Length: 473
Image (cartoon, rainbow, N blue to C red):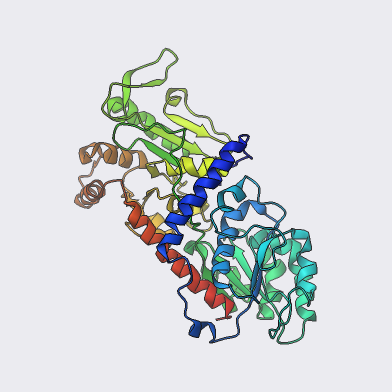
């Protein structure tokens, strides 16, 4: 997730809000599919958990828990139903990206939905007069979702367990834990077992690669009895104005992005730089650059070329050295407010995961780059391994499949020039040739209509999951 700060230009914030409102009305409300498609008959099949709170001691994951809140708020629409988020700060100017979109009512202290201070969670869960409610549970919270289980359990588990035990039978609340890092398991033995023994815990993962937690070391903590569901954190981001950071070029794939904080143990920056440099040395004109280096030893864009000079954008906080030769090719964007961040990503031609081969993003840790690509309607360059790890994007409508036998840079050059002959095939593999030909044939552009259809399908799946959770199914 990019490190971003509050904007300095208030006019830009105001303008962004107005644009978000206009586009949301066209893109979302006009579709008619954002309201729930669930029938009233289904709603009466079981007693509904009606007062849901989502709490976190780790505000930076708002991209995840605010989408859960959005799905919940679409389904819990009755007078005696409510959704509230308990957090100390949304920060990073995120509220300005969603406040005007209708995604979620961020009015603090709202009677049906809104934001509350994280420090008031325990008091509110302990109250039995919080809501004017004539339901079976009375005016109590009957579902608590911890947005980052690996962190939030430490702060709240003991107090919530005490309240749960004190409630009479028939008035117990359900605890739902949203998990992000399958490699962070300290909370399992420390907190989860007591909840599982009471049959009061279920998990909500943000991606499939670690949704099944019923293997070592989880089985020793009664995890075979825990229900695990997946909710995809895809917000309804409308189209935004073209980013001021991206040149509107002539033609060709010109802007690729690696999205996320610069963490070399998770992303292969050095390998990407070496591969790009090697390719530039071999054929700089194919990338839109001159053969001669500048006086300071950097590749120079060829402004007379029919192809737009290629730019690799690093979008995220942190630091990592960029070779001097790539000074004009690689651009690092940091500390962007969210409206500007989303506009920048949305202006890309393609998203490069650049995952480290032995990194956690394939097996245990979910990368925000995946859902960001889908949200911003930018095709994701994905290997079969990545498509298998993140099964929700295993769909040609939103990804470009790169054979694992070639690098990301080699794939981008082939897509940029429409020439498969640029891809090395030293062993003359007919299957590799076929897959590269197929990749280039399908091209790097994906219609907006296909992204929209894909996201509609995901939002339907999210509703199905939340309906099931609300009914303890």
